[in-house]
Image (cartoon, rainbow over all chains, first blue to last red; front, side, top):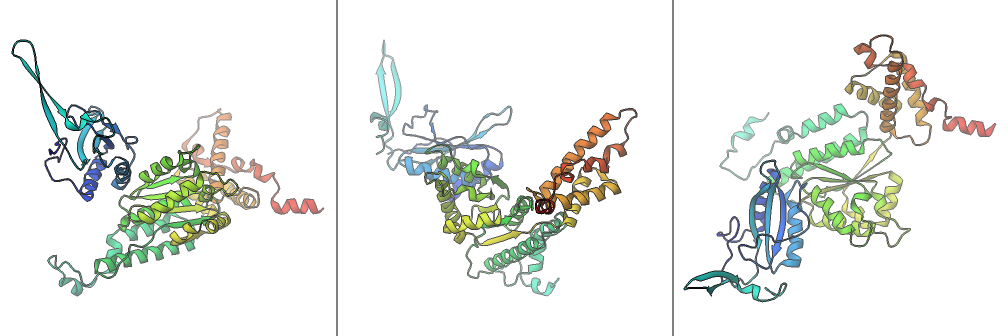
Length: 140
Length: 315
């Protein structure tokens, strides 16, 4: 078992919905667009997760985002889901905050693989155990 | 006003024992909203009365909650019925502001939609569209204009029904997150409610908007002109009075909206009039005065009124 620590708050206990709502409201009050993304491949270099719906650019209240999150959890509750807040201000145009809001029940963690190369060189790589299974069946 | 009552309640004592409703009224800014409503909206006496009553109810409910009495969040969904141009959208905007001041909605914005924004073109298009609108309206007021078009009994495969079901579900389950106001003509709304009992039972406040009288319309016209820095000459004012009287008796009369359109056309004619005699420079007064000839060329004076038409047909 290994808890994935990616994005903000990931060393804390999982946020409650009330805490998530407050974080989302903070993002919206700053004028950031909140996106919902999900994946079943938690490799840290996998930055491009699948999007749930469109980025939510014109929402005033966190309840709107929480409604979408509830829908996303219904479908992909067994995967990782994260919220990311995009600041579209000129000069920034990047993600300002990103945090995990949903995890699979079991997180098997990563395997360290060693590849022996020419000479006595060894190359290292990590591979999520979950990724051994085909897409869609990884956390079922 | 009553200092004795307040001296006992310091910050250390959380359960307040008395609440000064009058002070709550002023401090929440509700008083300002109601005053502004009175000053900026002409007529609409019954509407203003209903809003005042609603505000009182909500204020008392809030006080009850603060004193720890049994409290259930009130249903705030409303329906506004009335003829076109009677100020439904304007009042909805004020209502959003009022509910925000009272703390019943978190953001206080108004999202105004019609059937087109909610109902999709093909199977599977409606639910995401309706949800998109609901998401935007969360924390504020969703104003559905001409709500009865959502339901089309003549077409059993109409996607409107799907939208209605989603709306009803959210109106019931997320009462704290948004307030829905349905608006439309009285007779069509009645039909809509009788074929969709789910809506009727979820709406607590029905507010009816009466038509404006001729004097009220004239006052509205004058307010509109003043806001745009225009003036009526005394003759033009007389012409406008006759115009309003005739316009009311003709088809497609839309109260304040008809008046606004008439004024827009008068401004157009005034601009043309000034433009055509360019022999001398125009002054600020020329530019702001609307004279009778800008109004009396209107078709309203040549089209017969309902009364005249029936007389013609009789003779």
